[in-house]
Length: 620
Image (tube, rainbow, N blue to C red; front, top):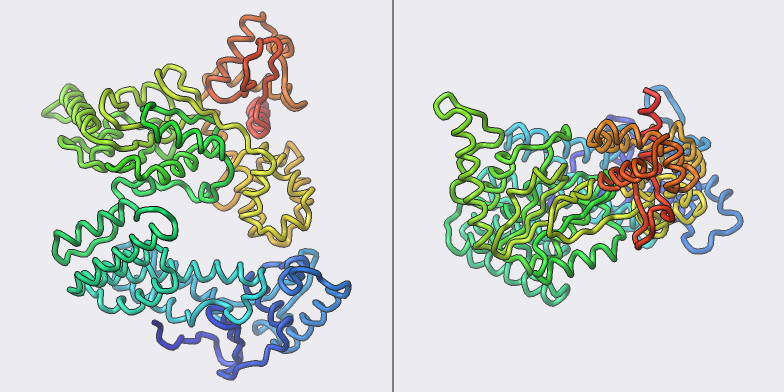
């Protein structure tokens, strides 16, 4: 599958390898890495290069069940031996392994560790592909794959902690292999990928993208019967192991091979919920929501309700829930599932013409002539635009009348944005996600997303930071998710941040989030910002609603507020206070009890993070 790896360490430098068995070489000679427990410590440090690794993580890797009382002292011995064996780092002669308050840190340069070199080459290859330089992309991705010698850390996988890191590394290698194989197919060189893809599919039989690439490489090499047999084997395996059919995208690839020549193809996800507008990365760790998901599947699956609105504040996980349901409902919608965002990246609403044009392209709607964002032309004028939009709307309604598909309209700002898009007849269903309640739409089935329960939020956090770290300080973990107000986005961002800041104790991070003046500053991971998402929701509110929310946010700090307290804080009469509070409920900025209760008896709440943002804005 691979050629012998090309080592990149300079003369006199140690070269470490994790993409296979753990090894270290100095000037081409393999170094003895000591007993198994010492190698486990080194593997754990190398899996997190240039990052402090807490003592607890190292302890879990070496003694997962019952660490001895001398565990900390033994770790010191193993680290000292590794420091002696590996020598200094760089020309400055700095210690290779250092200890600080966050744990032990192993200093390593890119040319000294295969996983760092692998990541650098993979990023460069994808960037080249993005520029259209397919030949350069294939070369760089192949160079990355040449570092892959087999299952990462395959000699130490009996340690749960090391096995978890090894699994992540192998998933990265598989993704890069898929990128490389698809690039070679696009370049018209499918034969070079066939054998490697076959070997990997045998090891990962349920990985659909690998199998699709194998089918394509066989088909483009003139081996159509073998390509079709690959699909048939996969279909039988899915039915036997999971009770499922291959995805519509995979089935479409199979059908294209039955009736067409050697035109290179990838599975075209035109009707897949994850195709044209995939969710942001922060929604990938879908967790919890069993009741809401079950209700969604029952309502859409039975076919009696054609429009469902899933509402909740920004970051509540509406898109993740909708896409999860769309994946699980594949058999109920044989004509496909599509997802279209109703807002632009800056949060402004897209025009109906733009949305109709995208739906037309995705579903191959006849009459899809207007480009997205079209404007009046000198020949046709504004009337020509209106006529083109009307033609698109008619064609879309006709398409819905003839098909059974699920349309996900994501992040809808108001009722007017979607009224002309909903099916008037036929068996199509529409799943709408929105921050507000969209009370003007009827008849629809409504599902409001509350905050995550503590157990669900902790499960989500544990997926991102590791179960061992969560168990090490469950009290602090609980404080973190509660400081996030049970908002899935905030819990995810906390997990992503803690996954990078491995030295940071959970209790210290919980203290930061407990501080109202600092919480939103802490909820940032790379380009994902909770404040940015909340600000987008804030912009949706009318000026009067913003002022009211700023006044009510202070009341919510004690756990909620009553109508009497709202009346006092707003300095208005009871009826005006009721209208003001209910306006915020309609906008998704205030939550109310799920059951029936009088306005005076109800306890209303402002989500914690939204309240903190309202305080910020009130002071501007």
